[in-house]
Image (tube, rainbow, N blue to C red):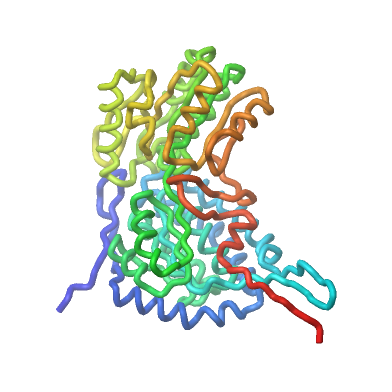
Length: 460
C-alpha cells in the first residue's frame, strides 16, 4: 500500500516542527481540476452582485479572525507579528477596490453605433485558472489573483507555497465559509510535484509568483499549449538619492524599504545609488536607522527583523557578503547569520560596492543592501538600468520635474518619487525584462482574468 503524501511545516524562527498535514498527489490534483471545470459555468452564471457579496463576507471574516490568522502567518513564515497584522489589514483596501471596481471593469462596452451596425465588447471568464502563489506575502499575492478571478466568474486551483500552506488553507476556508463552492476554489497542498501536476491539467490560465528560474520552467511547459500565462518574478530594485535630496529622510525611507519583511519582497530596495555630495550623510543616517531594528522572537511585538523563511537563503546571503568583501566592499553593519536556533541573519549594509559584485546584480531577498557612490544623474541611471530585472525603481529629490525625467529613462514597471516598496490596488503591478510578464491590480488587472469578446450587431 502506498503511503499517502504529507507536508511537514516548520517554524523558520525556531526550526521546530509546527505540524504535518496531508498533501495532494497527481490523482487528487486531477480530481480537483475536473470538479472545477464542472462547477465553473454555474459560478459564472451567478449575478455579479452575489459574487461581490461573497467577497464582502470574506472581508468581514478576515477582520474578525485577524489575530489567529496573523499568528499562523508569523509561525510559518517568520514574519514579525506586527507585520503579519499589517499584511492582513493592508489587504482590506485591495478587497475594497475589487468590490468597487470589478463590475465596471468587466461590464459590456458599446464602442460604436453607426449605420445600423453596433459594436460591443464583453468580458468572458477565462474558465479554470491555476494560481501558484508565493510565501512572502501570501494574503497580498494570493488574493491579487484569487479574488478578481472569482469575481469575474472563474474557478481557481490555488497552490499556496509549501512555506505558507496553513495560511493558504485559512484563505480557502474563509472563502468557502463566505459562499464560494468548494469545487470553485480548491487549495492544493504540496511542493514542486503538486505544481507539476497542476501544470498538466487542462487549465485556461496560469498565474505564478516566484523566482525567475521557476517561472521560466513553467513558461516552457505551457508554451506548446498556448495557455494564458502571467509571471510575477524577481527584482533587483534600485533607488537613487540625488544631490538635492534630504539625506535623513531618504535614509529612513530606504532603510525601511530594504529591511521590511526581512528584505523578503520582490519590491524590496536591493541596491542604492547616492550622489557623492550627500553620500557620507546618507550612509550615516542609514546605518543609524538599521541599528534601531530589533531581531528576536517574531511573536514579540517589539521585533522588527524576523526570520529568513527558507533556510537555503542563508547561504546565498553569506556568499554575497563574502563576494563583495573579496572585491573591495566595506562592511558597515551585520554580515553574519544570527546565533541560536532558526534562520536569523543580521541586517547588513555594505558600501564601496560596484557591479562586479553579486550583491549589486543578483537578487538577495534578505536583509542586505549595497550602497554605491555616484558622481551624477547619468551615472545613476546607467547603473539602475544595468540589470536583467525591471520591477521597481525610485528617485529621491526635492525636484519633482528632475525626478520624473530620470524615472522616465529607467526600465521598470513601477517607479517612485521620494518613496519605495509600495503597491497600490489602483495601479497596475507589472515588470519588464526578467521581472515577468502580465500584471495584477488596477482595472487592467481585473480584466486579465477575462478574454474580450467582440460583438458585431446589425439591425434586421
